[in-house]
Image 1 (spheres, rainbow, N blue to C red):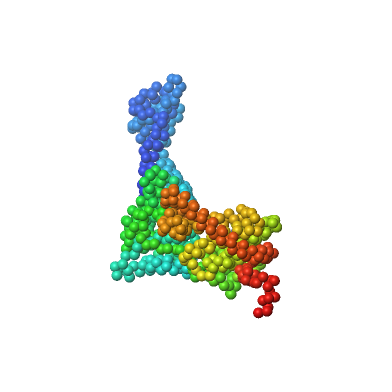
Image 2: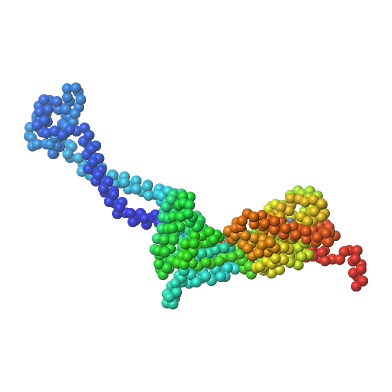
Length: 617
Ligand code: ADP
Ligand code: MG
Ligand code: ZN
């Protein structure tokens, strides 16, 4: 579409160029071709030659004569001269032996002359033009072509095209409220103008990956009855400096033409990163960002162009982008809480055939920390499992299994593990579970399994908190580290050795203990001092130290002390419950998967030799 309207605009230019070319062709090319070997002379020279009898050929036209002379060396030379009214000319030529003379040239066919010098070149130019533009259009539709540099490539969505509405987004109520206001403003700007309220020019959706930022923007497109331009930040990054800036300009030009409208820039951090002093490396990005800043200042907010952007690295954005008048509104898209997860599961369950009595609350409880995308994936995995098992509807156990698939990968049913190793794994997992069950600050055990998973886990213990947790107390943190060390403790206690199977536990325990010391102020040697900062909170949180090297050594000592204390405590608990440890490990070895309920039943059961005594009471 874009290409066609461009061509129409260019028609006058095309016609003028074509005419100019034809005129040039006629004034220079045609005469040059015709004249190549013809010399102009005067009439008297012609008569002289004719009298000498060397004219071998003469074409006599109405106003000119072209004749040929055979000179002495035998070469032929053509001349032209004006024709005078000479009655004896024919006689004279005849007498002097001119071989042939005709009366044709000036009476060139005027039609063929016209076609040759005007129609033919015009047709040729049109043909060329057609071929060229066709090629260009084709390439413009392709991606990343030289001809499309500087064009924004923004996709325009209108209502029907995304097919998404706010109904499709669950659990992001605050975000939806903010965006609904923007949609409302675009529908009825007067309502806001009356009070004198100005809506923000830009709103920034921030949150971890998979929380529905892109989905929210698509829903806005579905809700708003206005054009919706969507482009990803990476599309601005071009090979050549300056092209990204040109794209930004083009995007805003289009948006201004179509106002009121919404412009959505996904993954804005690719162009919006903080500008740095050291130049050279990122010229292109910087120019693009500068252009974006300029454009955002330049357009009139009242006209109704609203810019949405999404990112999961808000702290890396250039402060200039975040100042009032630009992206001054921040719309958080956080990981969903329990009710949010339940709602998201239900939204996605509508797309599949599910049993009517599925308990989504249980699934929501088991998926603390999962993002919307992961929950959508869980529903899909459940549907796949139902098909695999030859069922027509999805049932509860499909969902429960798929939670584990998403957390730990598929079961590796045919993995060969020696009985000895299997035993170690069973003790390891029961070690975790026992330590968890005994401590009151640890989350209850939900499930223990020693079926290996494709993620590499040889077994795992699932713990599920009863309610939603937003804070973690020091006791809870310590309890969690203790649970993590429980696996290794069991190996040491029973087999007197340790295995590499605890590597993941060690990693997690260290991470938590470190966070306690450096960020939560939960250690004995440091007070409320920030020793580390978190860099990408929404992307798993890399941290960097902000303390002296001596303090860093102190941190390591403190972390080690914390974990050691927990490890000792776990060993203590297990030594005390060593009978239960053996009993439960045996049970797990036999069943491979044990539910939290079965586990607690065995744990709380009195030892069998006292069973008879129990009956007395
Ligand atoms: P991001 O925040 O990384 O842009 P997306 O918007 O691309 O995440 O989300 C990916 C997918 O996850 C969506 O297409 C949708 O299926 C699902 N999803 C994420 N959040 C939600 C939500 N709040 N409600 C319903 N589905 C969601
Ligand atoms: Mg996204
Ligand atoms: Zn473990």
